[in-house]
Length: 543
Image (tube, rainbow, N blue to C red):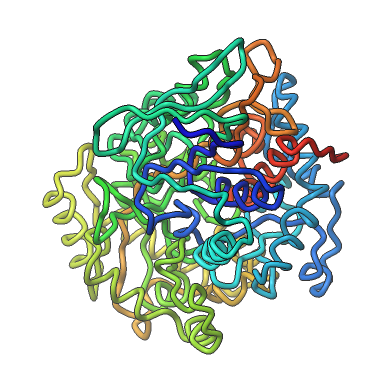
């Protein structure tokens, strides 16, 4: 039995942020985490590090005049909240008003800087989504963010007040007279049960998306049945254990069917968990095809506008996976993988290497995928490419795999290339129109080809990438009020219990509603955690 002021369940970004601020208040803290010591920081260490931020100096530098009012309007247009979503709406309003002080400037003071041009993610298909570019990327990716906070945590003047228990799994919450009084669990390797009593417990244990079977169980049935093949891009310990524990004592769990998955997942060449996936940032100039080689339609699939819709359309396709077809020039300029591992120049903050990769393409990454990833096929002509695409499916025995039809594929390529040959003024293809829109903003123009034909002999070989849905983030979770207090099924705070980050649906049990503006995940881990600490410390703050 160990008596502490606050027990934090989970050593990810939310847990680290909370621990840092709790030490500032002079409190005794314990972090209980299922992973090994070297993995402190969780999935945020592997994240690309993008954040939706509102009215920043970076935006203003580029003539972008943003405001909380504009951002909240965009947020609601994408979230499509039902009337009953009181707390998610409240958290969204809090976020757009406080992200500049509680996230942007808070990080800047700690030496975390951002790439000097904001990107324009999730523009929406029909005038919804982000009406302005506000996706800010951390210079150094999520790895630099986590390392900065962990270093500050270890160097804190009251670091002796912090205990970290790694490879320990919390299984249940201790209660007395209706209040949460601690946690109970076992070492990850097995053995005797442990109990820790605390004045407050903060659940920061992530979501459910690391458990693919649970993802299937919670799948939004409006999308039909889940695809046969789903890759795992979440933390391996994000399995909902603490969601169950909170539910057992009367806590309210909401919107678990709302997930932020990605449409362009490929098998990790060196998986650390079964079916581990990497998430491509899908090339805009590639043709997005179904399992038979037919282009998705009538509206073609193009990333950068509505990730939720991409996932829905592919999930509802009978085969549940897709192909993207391009040539080497397109792949060199546009193929990137989300995360710190695959973006070394950005991660290591090597500006000249970053400029080189931006101007000339990341050949190192593309060659690695070509040589090591089972989902990447390269050939000099269409017949050879189709043979290799079909051979890949037979070799991997993918359930529900289709057969790519050569004539269909050739027809789709020919139609697209003919559209480009007409000239920009006569483009009537919806994908080319979207590329025009994307290239208007400087942050996206550098990573998007200028109307590149597929069958351009100067740009060979051809490249086809087989892509699956990759499970990533839970947008629903433990319901919380604006103080990050966990709410019961009757809407009352459970004394002594708090939740932050993905465990709380990034705020309120589902701050993003139906779909996210992107970049609202790691940033809300920080905001949720800081609001929880203010509440635990008896501080008050006007939203």
